[in-house]
Picture 1: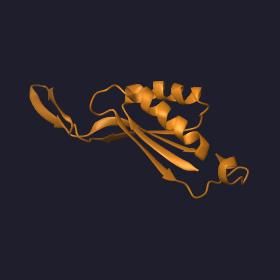
Picture 2 (picture 1 turned 90 degrees about the horizontal axis):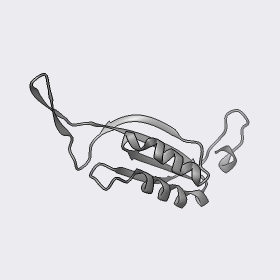
Picture 3 (picture 1 turned 135 degrees about the horizontal axis):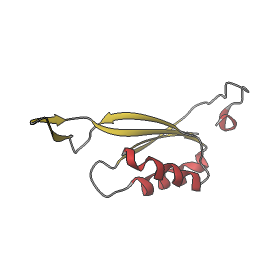
Picture 4 (picture 1 turned 90 degrees about the vertical axis):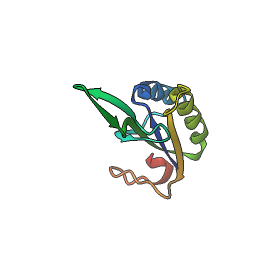
Length: 112
């Protein structure tokens, strides 16, 4: 099993969710987060004063999948989240040792 963590622009969330649904992936956890990478934030003017906004709003998606689903999921995320501009985000894939469904005590891929 693998865990996919994707950091994307908030307005791309629905597109990514729909793209994952098209490849048969339904469950995910979504968190609103803030961060920055190479773009290092931006400057805004509020009530006549200029402010630097270092942390930009992003969405973090987390999915735990069977190994056989990972390649399709990563491709769907990248295709749907891409705008071609800086700040599109990142996808991280890591190993998951075990998963347990609390309600039924199912383990491994049956739990996800």
